[in-house]
Image: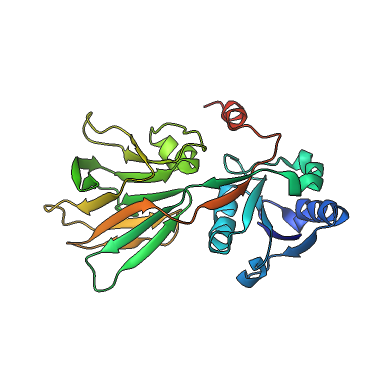
Length: 264
């Protein structure tokens, strides 16, 4: 069983926790490889373990996703909604091969209307905003071709169920059971009391377009990555990807336990 170890040296100085996990996994018969920048190391792997916070997990997941490699996070960051193993429970990795596999929805966004079509993938969320500028944006949103309404505020977050505990939660969205096959739309600091979070089933298609009167720069970022600009006439078509993320879920873990730990 090939396992990739994906570490954040900021969260794991001297890679102490990574080394401890590697020893346990090797004793259990796993073939371990540390990620040093070459993404091909993920090819043929059964699992990839991230050592860090949720950001480290997301970077690892983006590489593992198209290769159908299962991911598991070891929590070394300030939050751990996406990470399923605590450092003091590393010994449980001896049973890695028995951990249940769960498929989690991933979002795919297509940017339409430009000279060339662009595509973004989000494990956690897609964020529409003004970028570094603190000004409002006006966005038109439709679902399966039917207008949902206009959203005026600091932006809009479209998140997966597992991404609901990230930026969307801070913006007032609900903490969503990761077993739910759905995605969420959460306005950021909306300028009207009628702008509420929405939850949609995975079969829906969302379209986000800058309002006709909007002349300011609007950016779309996936999982906090490099933003793409939505120019006048552009739109973003969002749907749940046909390729889900495979997550390892230790028998010990319970989503509601993490909610209690973080006192939501």
